[in-house]
Image 1: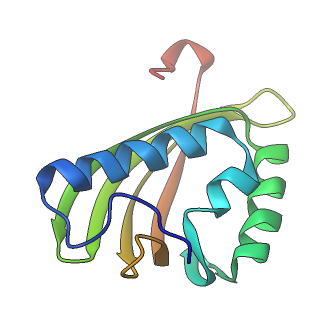
Image 2 (image 1 turned 30 degrees about the vertical axis):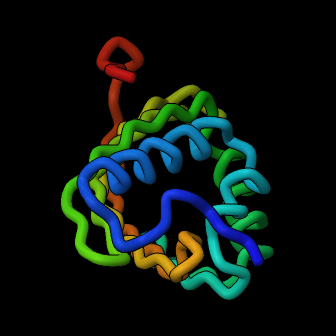
Length: 136
């Protein structure tokens, strides 16, 4: 049986640690590494896309990081309770034309008893920025 520590129910320390693990994995831009934090039948809403299953997460993230170049993410714990965590985040990237963007958003996460994320609901907005405005 897969276990992804820390396990729920979360306290401040374990929730903060879970958020940092997620940030580190996403900044690796390794779709397989990221996917291992999710259940095999994970459910996502990412902007207006609905993604189901770990295999589809890998496919989605592979495409994302081909379009979003020099990606850098920062996540922050917003709230937690039992097996749920809410985060706010921002990330920066540029597209193939060299246009930089900063994306802002919130995610709601729900975990199973083994610490794998079974639900991820993300609301994200992009803002075009100049390279000189980068913060991350």
